[in-house]
Length: 34
Image (cartoon, rainbow, N blue to C red; front, side, top):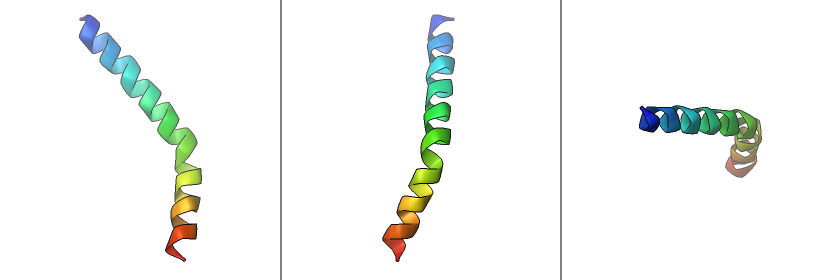
């Protein structure tokens, strides 16, 4: 039970971080591909 709770919290944190980083990451990749 505790394991699934930690896993869920971890997934939520990772998702939030990805949502924050995604636009910058896409811009970075576009700049690099030039």
